[in-house]
Image (spheres, rainbow, N blue to C red):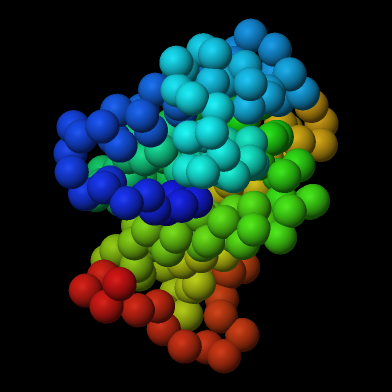
Length: 214
């Protein structure tokens, strides 16, 4: 999991710092549900969470820090499947992504993070780091597929995973429409067909790293 900041004391599970963090991120999520990103403010989050305003500024500095950290936390719930075949893995993951963004608050969250990244260099760095880490992790599915002989050896795992996620972010951020099961099915089907055809080959022709190489 990638988080925007690391506070002193986070290594003490169940400690005061952990409880503060949980209360604040829960308040951010609830506020997104009530009024969306535009209505978020440090004052409203302090009131809802019961955490002093000064603590929020000291720990997160700004709203953008909170929403980036919340995105990282929530996305950890999207588990990577291992069905034994890449078509099965792509379909399962695609539906998991669709279910994740089926919640209006989570759609508001990704909108908020992208908006923040356009204005704040720190938020931009956090967003890039977050997606890079998720693509690397999900890319293990592609590495397994290469090892099973399902895909060409020079398939780029991150490009495959980027292509799987792209339709969801286009639907949410550009088309401004909700995601659904049909989108999840079409994304998985299209990426599987393109990957088999060699559409995501590395320019240098290098083989994908083995699963044990990270």
